Length: 97
Image 1: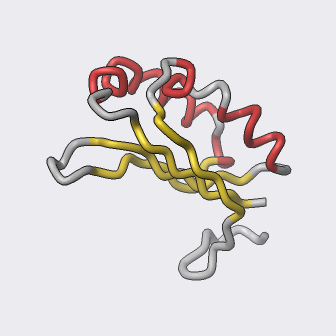
Image 2: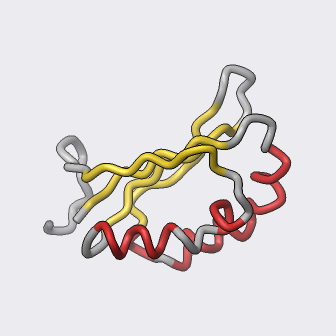
């Protein structure tokens, strides 16, 4: 099952993001092919202000358990996290679903 994860950083927390970025990227890479897409979104000042992830996992409970181990989450970076089931329609990966 695919999920879209949209995180919003706490205002003024760019230092927290940068201090934990290397660990966060390593965490994403360790998830392997479960991470279909990942990257920061930018605010008006062209600074990282949150993240957008597309994750494939068995169900919402498995996703929530995995998200709880995100170094950004552990460091208290996020003001809020939005999660929704996702259906990939345009340009999906070549692998069967």
